[in-house]
Length: 161
Image 1: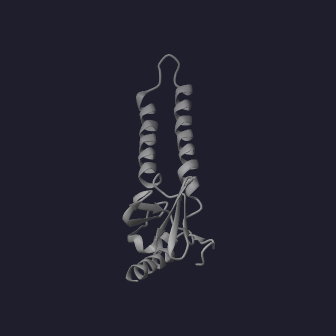
Image 2: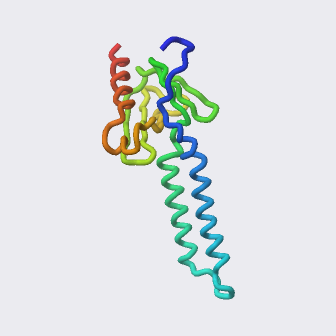
Image 3: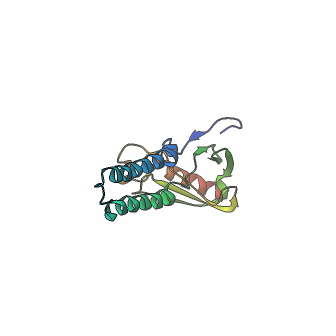
Protein backbone atom coordinates (compact mmCIF):
# COMPACT_ATOMS: atom_id res chain seq x y z
CA UNK A 1 0.00 0.00 0.00
CA UNK A 2 1.42 3.37 -0.97
CA UNK A 3 1.65 6.22 1.56
CA UNK A 4 -1.46 8.36 1.50
CA UNK A 5 -3.49 5.63 -0.14
CA UNK A 6 -6.59 4.55 1.75
CA UNK A 7 -6.70 0.94 2.89
CA UNK A 8 -9.56 -1.50 2.88
CA UNK A 9 -11.92 -1.79 5.78
CA UNK A 10 -11.64 -5.15 7.56
CA UNK A 11 -14.05 -4.45 10.42
CA UNK A 12 -17.77 -5.05 10.08
CA UNK A 13 -19.94 -2.05 9.28
CA UNK A 14 -22.61 -3.11 11.78
CA UNK A 15 -20.35 -2.48 14.80
CA UNK A 16 -22.08 0.87 15.37
CA UNK A 17 -25.43 -0.92 15.52
CA UNK A 18 -24.15 -3.46 18.07
CA UNK A 19 -22.46 -0.83 20.24
CA UNK A 20 -24.95 2.05 20.15
CA UNK A 21 -28.34 1.15 18.65
CA UNK A 22 -28.97 -2.38 19.96
CA UNK A 23 -28.39 -1.43 23.64
CA UNK A 24 -30.98 1.35 23.30
CA UNK A 25 -33.45 -1.07 21.74
CA UNK A 26 -32.77 -3.60 24.53
CA UNK A 27 -33.31 -1.02 27.27
CA UNK A 28 -36.46 0.22 25.51
CA UNK A 29 -37.97 -3.27 25.26
CA UNK A 30 -37.26 -4.04 28.93
CA UNK A 31 -38.67 -0.64 29.98
CA UNK A 32 -41.77 -1.25 27.84
CA UNK A 33 -42.32 -4.65 29.47
CA UNK A 34 -41.97 -3.16 32.95
CA UNK A 35 -44.26 -0.26 32.01
CA UNK A 36 -46.94 -2.57 30.61
CA UNK A 37 -46.67 -4.83 33.64
CA UNK A 38 -47.15 -1.92 36.03
CA UNK A 39 -49.92 -0.35 33.92
CA UNK A 40 -51.91 -3.55 33.64
CA UNK A 41 -51.37 -4.68 37.23
CA UNK A 42 -54.52 -5.30 39.16
CA UNK A 43 -55.65 -2.14 40.87
CA UNK A 44 -55.35 -2.31 44.60
CA UNK A 45 -53.37 -5.54 44.55
CA UNK A 46 -50.10 -4.20 43.18
CA UNK A 47 -47.82 -5.89 40.72
CA UNK A 48 -46.66 -9.41 41.52
CA UNK A 49 -42.94 -9.51 42.31
CA UNK A 50 -42.08 -12.19 39.69
CA UNK A 51 -43.52 -9.93 36.98
CA UNK A 52 -40.84 -7.36 37.82
CA UNK A 53 -38.02 -9.79 38.55
CA UNK A 54 -38.07 -11.36 35.08
CA UNK A 55 -37.48 -8.07 33.20
CA UNK A 56 -34.79 -7.12 35.75
CA UNK A 57 -33.10 -10.47 35.17
CA UNK A 58 -33.34 -10.01 31.38
CA UNK A 59 -31.84 -6.52 31.69
CA UNK A 60 -28.96 -7.87 33.80
CA UNK A 61 -28.19 -10.69 31.37
CA UNK A 62 -28.33 -8.28 28.41
CA UNK A 63 -26.08 -5.75 30.14
CA UNK A 64 -23.54 -8.45 31.02
CA UNK A 65 -23.49 -9.86 27.47
CA UNK A 66 -23.16 -6.43 25.87
CA UNK A 67 -20.32 -5.48 28.22
CA UNK A 68 -18.55 -8.79 27.61
CA UNK A 69 -19.01 -9.16 23.85
CA UNK A 70 -19.61 -5.74 22.33
CA UNK A 71 -18.36 -2.76 24.33
CA UNK A 72 -14.66 -3.42 23.66
CA UNK A 73 -15.02 -3.67 19.87
CA UNK A 74 -13.14 -1.10 17.80
CA UNK A 75 -15.41 1.16 15.76
CA UNK A 76 -13.33 0.72 12.59
CA UNK A 77 -10.21 -1.17 11.51
CA UNK A 78 -8.56 -0.43 8.18
CA UNK A 79 -5.86 -2.55 6.53
CA UNK A 80 -3.09 -0.30 5.19
CA UNK A 81 -0.78 -3.04 3.94
CA UNK A 82 2.01 -3.04 6.52
CA UNK A 83 -0.17 -1.75 9.37
CA UNK A 84 -3.72 -1.57 10.68
CA UNK A 85 -5.43 1.72 11.50
CA UNK A 86 -7.78 1.30 14.48
CA UNK A 87 -10.42 3.84 15.51
CA UNK A 88 -12.40 4.09 18.75
CA UNK A 89 -14.62 7.18 18.51
CA UNK A 90 -12.41 10.14 17.55
CA UNK A 91 -9.17 8.40 18.63
CA UNK A 92 -7.04 6.54 16.08
CA UNK A 93 -3.90 4.45 16.28
CA UNK A 94 -1.73 2.88 13.62
CA UNK A 95 -0.49 -0.60 14.56
CA UNK A 96 2.36 -2.11 12.54
CA UNK A 97 1.79 -5.76 11.64
CA UNK A 98 5.21 -6.62 13.12
CA UNK A 99 3.98 -5.31 16.51
CA UNK A 100 1.18 -7.89 16.68
CA UNK A 101 2.14 -10.91 18.80
CA UNK A 102 -1.02 -13.00 18.41
CA UNK A 103 -4.34 -12.99 16.58
CA UNK A 104 -7.27 -14.71 18.27
CA UNK A 105 -10.45 -15.42 16.35
CA UNK A 106 -13.67 -16.27 18.18
CA UNK A 107 -16.49 -17.85 16.23
CA UNK A 108 -19.91 -19.05 17.33
CA UNK A 109 -20.62 -15.66 18.92
CA UNK A 110 -22.48 -12.78 17.39
CA UNK A 111 -20.69 -10.66 16.40
CA UNK A 112 -17.56 -12.69 15.60
CA UNK A 113 -14.45 -11.27 17.29
CA UNK A 114 -10.80 -10.87 16.31
CA UNK A 115 -8.43 -9.99 19.16
CA UNK A 116 -5.00 -8.61 18.36
CA UNK A 117 -2.44 -8.98 21.15
CA UNK A 118 0.25 -6.32 20.82
CA UNK A 119 3.94 -6.53 21.69
CA UNK A 120 3.75 -3.19 23.52
CA UNK A 121 0.56 -1.61 24.85
CA UNK A 122 -0.69 1.15 22.59
CA UNK A 123 -3.25 3.89 23.00
CA UNK A 124 -6.02 1.29 23.40
CA UNK A 125 -4.11 -1.15 25.60
CA UNK A 126 -2.35 -4.45 24.99
CA UNK A 127 -5.34 -6.04 23.22
CA UNK A 128 -7.45 -4.59 20.44
CA UNK A 129 -10.67 -6.39 19.48
CA UNK A 130 -12.84 -5.88 16.42
CA UNK A 131 -15.59 -7.65 14.53
CA UNK A 132 -14.35 -8.72 11.07
CA UNK A 133 -16.21 -8.39 7.80
CA UNK A 134 -18.25 -11.57 7.32
CA UNK A 135 -18.97 -13.35 4.05
CA UNK A 136 -22.41 -14.92 3.84
CA UNK A 137 -24.92 -15.70 6.57
CA UNK A 138 -23.46 -19.04 7.69
CA UNK A 139 -19.83 -18.14 6.90
CA UNK A 140 -18.70 -17.68 10.52
CA UNK A 141 -20.26 -21.00 11.57
CA UNK A 142 -18.93 -23.22 8.82
CA UNK A 143 -15.35 -22.13 8.10
CA UNK A 144 -12.55 -19.83 9.17
CA UNK A 145 -12.79 -16.24 7.95
CA UNK A 146 -10.40 -15.81 4.96
CA UNK A 147 -9.67 -12.24 6.09
CA UNK A 148 -8.37 -13.54 9.43
CA UNK A 149 -6.30 -16.28 7.78
CA UNK A 150 -4.71 -13.71 5.46
CA UNK A 151 -4.00 -11.38 8.37
CA UNK A 152 -2.33 -14.18 10.37
CA UNK A 153 -0.05 -15.02 7.43
CA UNK A 154 0.87 -11.37 6.83
CA UNK A 155 1.63 -10.76 10.52
CA UNK A 156 3.85 -13.84 10.57
CA UNK A 157 5.71 -12.62 7.45
CA UNK A 158 6.12 -9.12 8.95
CA UNK A 159 7.62 -10.57 12.16
CA UNK A 160 10.14 -12.69 10.19
CA UNK A 161 11.46 -9.63 8.32
